[in-house]
Image (cartoon, rainbow, N blue to C red; front, side):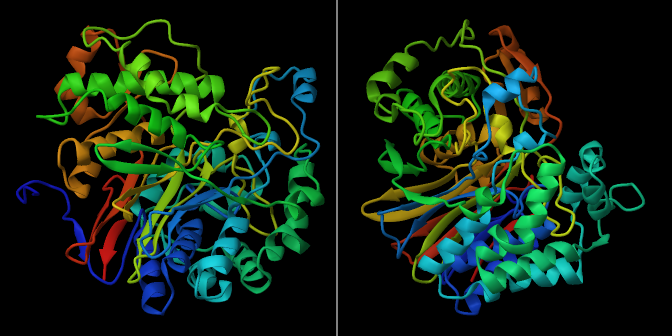
Length: 530
């Protein structure tokens, strides 16, 4: 139960439906769609499209998408991989011949063909009740008619000023007289409105063919990219089988590789050997979570890639045998040494949305342009801001995640779904780029090991070990509490540039017929029930 004398927010409660997102306009849009007769799938796509307008630094039509769906509350979870592929002409060998060892964020080579719009149109067509015109109408209205800049958006835009000002179209779209707009500034994106209208009218062809596609290809080619009209015209996501593990009597479902959901499951498998009790922020428990994360992310670096191009040993990685071997390496007195090398990457931006409707359709939906404001490159006529997901490719010859034609990069964005007793009980997700896999495990452990309600668990302070190092990013209120002891055990502590990630979750209480939701105070959004 919440201590009402302390800052924070209460759980959202509802019966007929619930939406939880990281922006108020997005949550309200989802609720409106449900009230208009749409279902959870319609509401999730509508909410996401709104966030592509009002929270453009975190997500956009120029990004990628993953989704998990439970139809009618079933535990037969559908998964959709809406991540984009590298151009057919992409070549790691070619980039190496130019002297490159990594793909830079602002490079056109960091831009794979965006997969989000394909996912939206496919999911609404297959499982929604409304048409794309109705689903995208709220986003179009905000893009053309304007919207006030919210506090977290203003903060992120100011922090990314150097990225935003690099590209003329991006600069003209997001800056006011060369500066980041203040909270409450009315902002417009009329070119993006035209692109959304094309998608509303023509479906996926409104984005992957015609004038929008031409504009995107021309901009990327002008920057030195290897993209072609065929790369866009042939872009297509796919339904995939979920992967899962059991944790404290619940089944935890994730999308399979090329996403890092498998890493969240490895962490949970390790944590299953360390029962939790007492204080959820006890330093010993945090030490275990940190080390489980470091071990799991080392496996990610070595083995996680596009399974269509490389054999990924999922069964081995999710085996109890491996979990026991990794758990045995954890020493509560000191940090593990000699982890495999991993190239550090910063926390990145994403939006996560969960929706449950009256029929108990449940959607776990995540859409991202990776780094805040992605690559910073914008197509000038369509207003499409490109992601930088291709930065996750390796240029190392023979690496499982090596850049190759038509290949999907290792992905950090991961929606989650919990089932039990033949039913879906919780769509959930955690934002924050590479933090997400640890975030999933951390959140579920606090709920199932320590009995915390969703909102309390989401609001707990966070930490994240930078892969391949002994460095930990740790929020200030947690550093004050356990920092000295973690340093004694051999960890190096860092202060993150801003609050770490965000999270949303909705609990389906089948017995009472109610919904309970939580949304992260690190973002502008909220959960609302009807």
